[in-house]
Image (cartoon, rainbow, N blue to C red; front, side):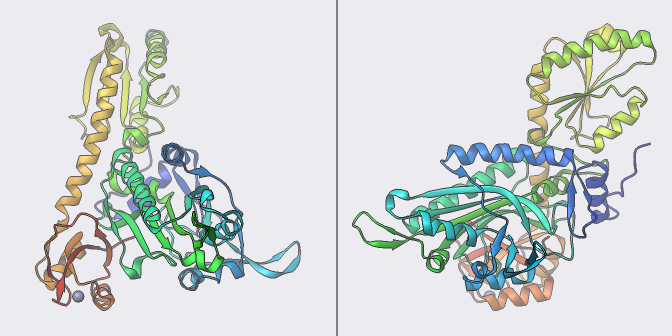
Length: 477
Ligand SMILES: [Zn+2]
């Protein structure tokens, strides 16, 4: 029998860890707080990487690579930046058996080392914009960790751009946010709310942070990607200047942005069920798993040639895997691939061969509603249609779930109740005191001030003063 998962309804957190480990996405490492990403989990990350790489390059961004070590003095240059990151830094004090003259920081993010280089490279308006990004690992010392969602070391890309004007930099922030929104909604089938972070939640050293926020299956929020408008904070401390067209010295305007391997955890959290993972087809390393069914050598010799023909035809168009492990029953294999979230299973036995058909089983629908027999002629278009349907259905299920668990409280009492059950959307006056009180009272935070507002003024849900904008409030990871 396959390993039993803790039911989601019993303990969401134990369920999550069970799924991540038994589906072989990741495992705990001998180093506390770090995780090992296993090939199946890494394959999902690679699909995200490929998607993003294409979009970044299509919008004229260039990949580069900067060192993992940052001189301690660099990190200390920007006051807010060091204040924000100081508690999480890993510091190298010795190298080659000797004490270092200046300690090195293992990068918690690379603004400082990259901007030190930009100061050297950027001279004139002709050098702008600079649109670089890098794929790398990041270390932020964490005590309370959770596979993918919060670990001491994780993988990401970080974009760092420099522009001649604030307007161009702001356009860049929103261009990237839109790429992240599309990745989340169209590829991960995960609806998100794009918006601005409050002052207290923004990136340490940014003028403003833009985010996409998603609701996980336990009704908490997950910050799924961020795009920062850095203004001229780093330009000033690293002295990144250029001569404009009038030959005047100007400071650059900057952005930085990232999504991380936590998105793999988000996929589990948003779509998973008691049987395990459910992957949207566009994110699935295996979109179709073929399970040949036979009891005797004779049956095997009927089934396998057809399996080969089908894999030859479908394999060019979909990511496909044939499970021909001889010593396992079909039932075991079905459970195994359900656990791993493969969107579509193709079953093929001797009876199907006689009828010229296969049986297709969808992962996104409950058992008994999820199977259909499909004639071999026209199999490919039917497989493609079903994959498209599964992708849409998972998105719609997630959206419905978010809508069912989003509240519009009228009083602070209702509000406190709402954030214990899901998202609350309410007016906020913008004051940090209100935000702090709310967090102390409810453990929720302001996830974002959504870009889409209805334009109606109202009263702050916390203090009752006039408020122009609504915010999304929730517990979060
Ligand atoms: Zn208020």
